[in-house]
Length: 548
Image (cartoon, rainbow, N blue to C red; front, side, top):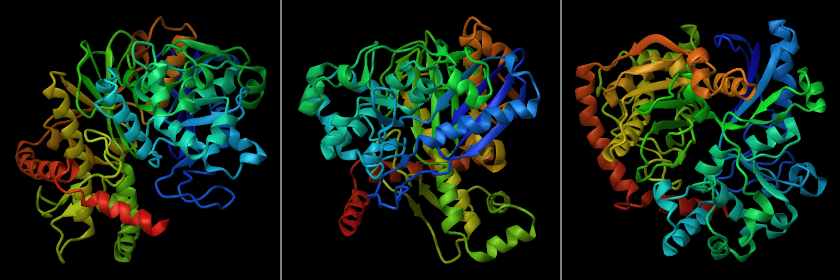
């Protein structure tokens, strides 16, 4: 028996065909989104304002049409042996649609309207709306706000919806539904509209199975008074449940049998936990890619300043699932490699037969800890946790005329590790135990220096995912539960979850130096992040004025 997991990422989607008996990954296929991230212009060439990040829903359909047939062909198995399919997604990535699920951007009259497209998780142009959501909640004494660390992010669901209401009320009037892209794909696969409880809980302010009261939404904007009943809905589907069955239309597109089980959608980071056997309290899973998400299950409900949220059953049924994260990690390294490395390093990497990332990693690994004399703030895309402020920007302190590209590359890796340590310490300060850490995603898979730096900075041993496609594996595991192959996700994790034998342990001498460097990071973190000096925000305001 087999299942398929699909992981819809920031730049690509990937499918993995998995043997449900033991988690063996039989075949995989990756499809790069033709529209990628639209942060400069729409397909028509229409320019986008600063801080926008959109996607095109056609890319998700094309992912299904390319990757699923590809894994079936590569594996050579009989499609009739596939019993279920599951998906995970970046979040919060919502979209406006008509009542039949047609995205507004598919309609000719809206093809050139930015608000008709999907707002990707890293769309930050709704910060003003997020500020309003937070201030209104404080004024009204909303009890749910502390469960999101005291601040709703501009990346989250209602900030993006409120931006549409305030900037294009006509488009708000034309949409019948505002839905997570994850749930939209499930809708397309099954013909059944569902709202998964994971994105609802972490991204849409649902606590205890309920949204905030209508009076709260009316206080934000009168147009939102009945938004839940008019545009969203109050039913939520549990993780691991069957959302529906594959339609004949989607069966023809994918090559799978009609009627197989389709699991309720999930979030990419959260679905990774069972894939790395993290089904017990106290195991932090860090999914590292373009950004990083830190998830952890616990037995008690705690309030942590600056966390992304805590939801009962949001990761593992019966446990409180905590989420935190960093808005940019791999994106920072990619920015530097793409825009800041001089030609001689490109030539040296080519001569060594290495990619530029690999070459800089090799050179940076030759250094002693602290040798470069730098410390950086990892805010190239704002700060998700623990400051929850997208208007913060990156910084490197200590550069001289002798500073080299490997120095900067290493300092950027260290900065992201310091950001992770800040998250761990915030959780532990509230009595939430972090017993062990498991790393997953492309970065720890490829970068040995990064793995060691994270262990040294946090002072903890790192276990590593046994799958290079852990989110897709996790989605395949949820598909196995939805298909009735396993009674619950814990049982699926026991048979299908995977860890590598390798464990990365902290080096005491390195750890001692990193403790000193982290103290410097903390000084900068608090000074620039907590109002001591708002120069980053002032500079950003001047930038926006210049571009207006």
